[in-house]
Image (cartoon, rainbow, N blue to C red; front, top):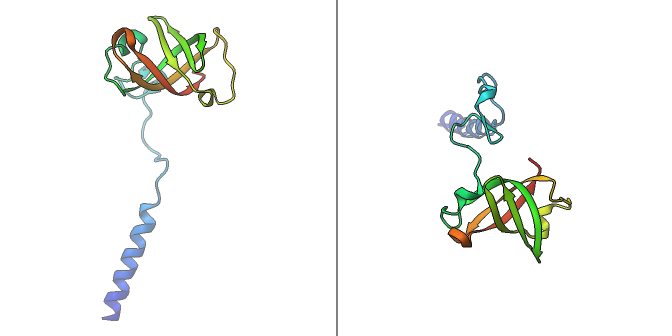
Length: 130
């Protein structure tokens, strides 16, 4: 009886140890360089999103855009531009992470879509260099 209990305890304790291994798994072949879309490798459907596309996105959808912050409107409101148009964004000071960008600096902004059509706004949660 003691051996059965001891064996059961050993099995339960070793299951937790093997579950914590995680991390990088070697041996898989990386995707080819030409499969890189919008800075992400290995997926065909991660093409870059553009301003002209997000005007019809569902409200609350999370998107990432690359372009330029071209003008500060007032407070936390800015104009963002990519090669398909301009979009008003709301970017709290904390999203700049202490960095200063000019209209000539290309940035990547990520956030939630609010509104539809001409009233679309992006509530930015992160700004970074591409």
